[in-house]
Image 1 (cartoon, one colour):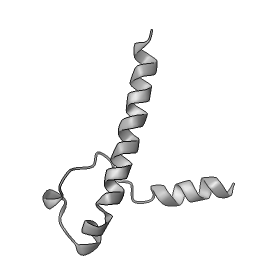
Image 2 (cartoon, rainbow, N blue to C red):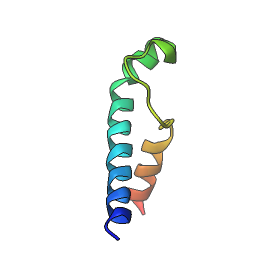
Image 3 (cartoon, one colour):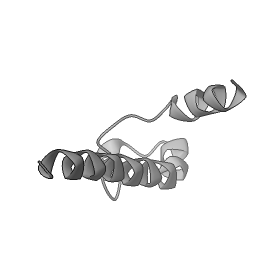
Length: 59
């Protein structure tokens, strides 16, 4: 029974860490560095996520 809550918490933690890594790589993406030359890969594309967070905060 404890595996489901642990799994959910680990998924949330991993996605939060992935978003932080994605924010760190923003400078390289703006310079036009291809994904294959990035120091580490992100699991998800967080491009519009900050806009979604701002819209949530406004409501």
